[in-house]
Image (tube, rainbow, N blue to C red; front, side):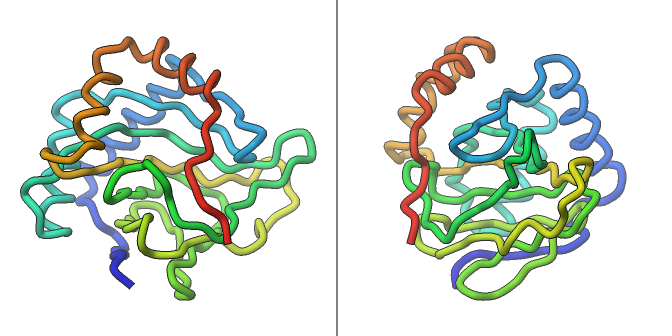
Length: 194
């Protein structure tokens, strides 16, 4: 397994800044529901101060100063209209070289399984997922209560000289609302399931 898991990753002040930013984004632009993924989501642009802090922490943890943020996404897993969230066994396709998966808030612990090893999803835990190489998934959703949820911030990372980074620069020239409309219309498959 190449992926890395860390509990209590951020100091309290830093985590509060990240969490408050995520909640503000949700309040300001909302989340869309993707029936194909059985989750709520939205690609977001973070304030430079927060993006730089996340990037600095990721570079140190992964040990690669050439990494850059290619995009960030808020994801919320929650039952909607009887649709129970699921994350099938898969490897990522075209999401970058690493995904920094930050648990922002949760009413349940829905573990992430990476290469057969379970990792708790407690608030302020972070998984650095090498998604194209490590098989990952979640077990069955652990609740039937429609109020239960898991709220995550995904920070997608790639080397500055990579094709991922070059393509992401085109997306960053769009407004947040335009980018999300484009992504909702395309509804791509980001994973190869097993």
